[in-house]
Length: 186
Image (cartoon, rainbow, N blue to C red; front, side, top):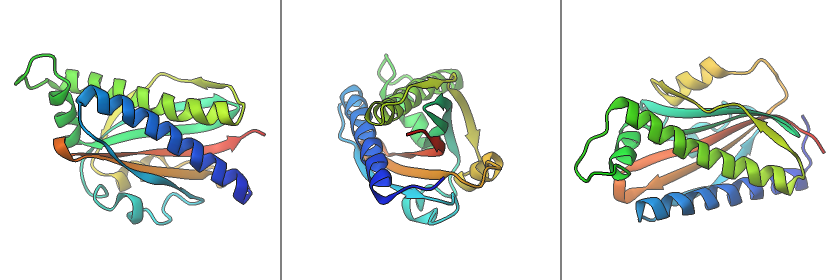
């Protein structure tokens, strides 16, 4: 897929808007500020991988992925370190001091991932006047980001990858969003 400079700029702006909106929702839920790193666009998922995610490359991760199709086709993955996922589920636990079990952590992260991905991809679809159909979110865990990317590497050569990073310092939560875009119809 070949992107003109104005198309990639528009795509990055829409991803940034979606991440900002999702971060605002999460910030209100946690009553904590969230730091975002502006998204970056790459033509190869291994290209500059260390740059946006250097802190996360070798840490165990909790991931939520959603495949989408329609006016755009691809996959979006929201992820946090396993420690960050645990901290998020504790911060959002209904009873203070309660440590959520594995199922509760998976449920919390699936919901937060779903909110984030739908905000981001919804804004992308609206700005580019496309309709998207989403599959159900899938929770998984991976030894690290490199292992996950190796396992999920698409055979399609012409795709673009958009990466964004988030941090919630007060809760020691680090994570990000990776969007693999196989096609964006004009």
